[in-house]
Image (cartoon, rainbow over all chains, first blue to last red):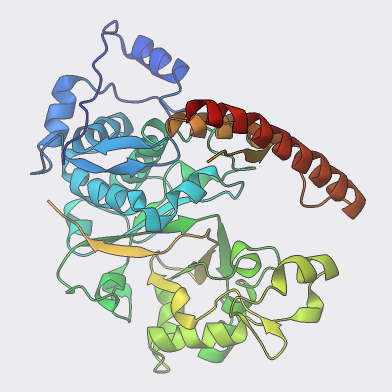
Length: 345
Length: 70
């Protein structure tokens, strides 16, 4: 099925003037963009076999018709290389499906935005950072693929802060949140393989991230000790998973932390089970009104007088990423699933 | 079927842009003050009663229009 072609506009051939114009129209994320000239968009489109007019989906809240060409325009603006386009198209396909609840994610007062996790050989082909500083600046793929998603959300979904994006604060990950799994240093099967795809394939996982909390534990050398520390970082009373159970948060474990757990024989599934068991908060620990109005509306996460941020252990995504160091990252979330899909062409 | 959308003043722009996006820019809106979730019970009840009356008024206004269109 096809969608409408991107609109053509004529502007003065000046980087500054074009940036001023795009910014004034609300077409950017606040940062300067690469002007999406027809020539640049054509070069970007060479990164996929899909036709420019192919309809990818309808993007809420403004119900924008998302075509391959329009995604390519935003990819140019973000600074993507053409080889990134298939990853971006797959991610956009995922978020446009009604089951992803992008409508809620775009318009909520929560700070969330899409988080992309890349698996497979495409990580090397695109030079995706999976190690030191993979959630921070420095690599083109991490920086621009996530940024292109954001620009699509703004320009095709209408996610303008204060208008349709009603985040009370937002968070810096809404500029870009894209990294690769450090499969080479992980003791466990990679995320896409865990979810049924062949190890040698490339895939992207999209979920919702609503902030990152660093969990430092450079002391514990046993699984029991480390799990205690990790669990303590996952059970804030006011977190979305605790207040609205049935969400799908992520724990990004450093290779060092993962190895401490794996060397005692724990599988990823067992780690999730352990964290599910250890993240219970006694009901009497909550404030009376929070308990009465929210926590006590048991959605399957309360048992034996304890409320948990996970309804089931499988609700937690565990992924290994980052470089040397005894840190893991708890990624708070919003009410969106975590979806893994093979990257198309 | 007559429809009234209830929203808070903080979400008014979003509500208007949504009505436009879905092709119903004329659908009536009833506004309640933001925030509404953490106010004293008496205040919440007053807001609810006022909003409920406005919803009824809007629905009654919509009914003759619907009859005229039938």
